[in-house]
Length: 119
Image (cartoon, rainbow, N blue to C red; front, side, top):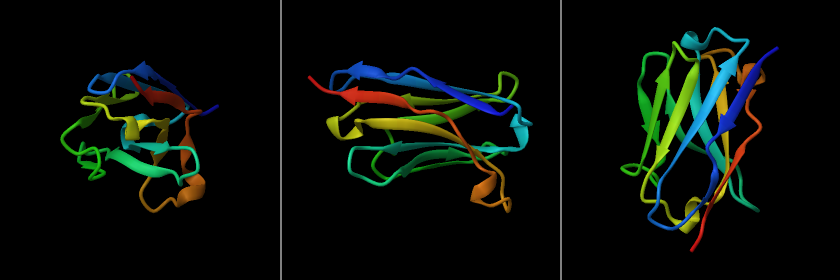
């Protein structure tokens, strides 16, 4: 019923750019906060960027100034524009949908898309 589908990952050279997309179905998209998380091998999953239903954004310090999160409620899609990519950005990137006060059990997650930054 609920699906979050990411796309846009791939292999890119250091300094390059990628734009990730996540399209949702089965939820009232405009009332959800949307986030991008990433998980590198052997590491915990970490928040990369978040955008609320009111279009307020937050970024991890490691990506601030390089990444931009945005949303298009009409298309039920959240984007992550990634510029000036570094090898340490290599990870599987996951899309998340959540609602304030609903708790983590109410979160929805996409399947992830792999980003590899390498020369």
